[in-house]
Amino acid sequence: MPDKCFGRIGMANVAFIGLGVMGYPMAGHLKVKGGHDVTVYNRTVAKSEKWAAQFGGKTAPTPAQAADGADFVFCCVGNDDDLRSVTTGENGAFHKLKQGAIFIDNTTASAEVARELSTAAIAQGAQFIDAPVSGGQAGAENGVLTVMCGADPAVFERARPVIDAYARMVGLMGPVGSGQLAKMVNQICIAGLVQGLAEGIHFAKKAGLDVEGLVEVISKGAAGSWQMENRHKTMNAGKYDFGFAVDWMRKDLGIVLAEARQNGANLPVTALVDQFYGEVQKLGGNRWDTSSLLARLEK
Picture 1 (cartoon, rainbow, N blue to C red):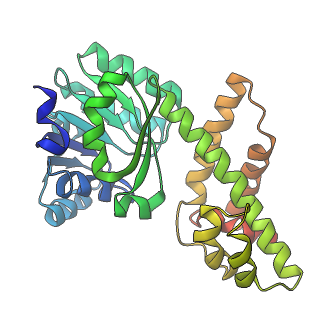
Picture 2: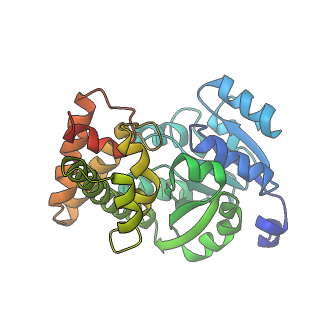
């Protein structure tokens, strides 16, 4: 099928595997904003049925049946093992990938599994893009995610107009695996920023400063960041139910540190912040958002 049938200027047959807090709205944007014919699969059937009722798409009982006949198959699951299960595992999507299909993986996973699955897809005449996202649940719901892709340039150009349905920024980082490596850099930067913000707010409270007035001033200077702008109020209030969970951040940082051990990168701050998140988990904060680093300073 020629490229002109895909993306903004036409409808494609699309499958979406994994309807968590990210995948559910992303699949919705592919249906509503993208105008594509979308079939979804989720382990919890009720979630698939709810999605179909809300957006008017279709459901499938297995990843393989969702992928059958699809031009583009999207996936957003938990980790490497989940990813292998829904792709090459029993009833996995790769068993039904058609010739020329593109599998676009939005999971934050290892670069190693991306390369492994790319090889498996190519063996079946299909293509693979690792395309982890940043922007959290709010970014997914509003269709303004940042998407970091690892792919062959020609494959990326075919898929980009379709990915645009849920993204504000889509970038090609290099060959397969590069998207995951870019996401690792993203998480490294976030870990350090959140720890710095937590310590700053903690210090300000101890010093008797008005946190709101302080942030209003320093956020306009070199200290300003997305984290400061969007999380300082909830952090100051001791509320941590507004974003990416600590359990998931620890999973991501585990991937980062494993990759660093292989490539020789020295990440002392990232390793330390990972330990701090472990302390937050011990406080019962597994599902708190990542700004809860402040909680361990105030315990």
